Image (cartoon, rainbow, N blue to C red; front, side):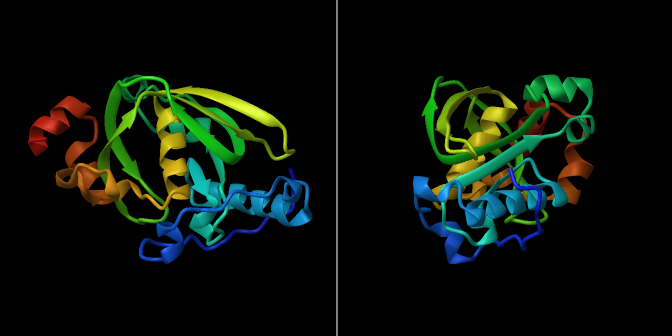
Amino acid sequence: MSTASSIAPIVQTGDPVLRSRATEVPVEKIHTPELQALIATMVATMREAPGVGLAAPQIGIPWRLIVLEDRADLVKKLSAGEQKERERTPFSTRVVVNPVMRILSDEKVTFFEGCLSVKGFVAMVDRHREVEVTGLDEHGEPQSFHAVGWPARIFQHEIDHLDGTLYIDRMLTRSFATQEQSQALFAGKSIAEIREMLGV
């Protein structure tokens, strides 16, 4: 992956690029300086935000390309109990070109999500607990990921972006709140407790 990188502005909800299906990346473009620079920019922008995933449409590029990374310093902000409930463990940078997702389990889990393109807000979203994602890596090589828990949630969130879907389309609307309000009201509480408080 190219080390040259810059930080791109993150497109906010309301921009049409976030509501359209992104186009497959032509395989012959993967090795071009243009695409390698885009990948580096996406990773740098995700880290700067900071976030755990970013889709190309979020920086205005309508291509089916996502990057993901859940660093240990972000995971450590949660208590051991919260990490366990969310099934959240750190993982290194993933670059997926033209991802295809397959649902492996009908089981769904509910947690709060935020989005760099819906800045300042969070809401509870039901997601499948277990998925498989295939696609190409930054070198154009086939790859496959079996994801459970939080990594599966990140994959679903980012692939939604490629289809013009935001988490606010899937959220439990009664849980929609600013990050500050959500933290003040729900920090340290289990999802079951929060559901009871909200009546959902």
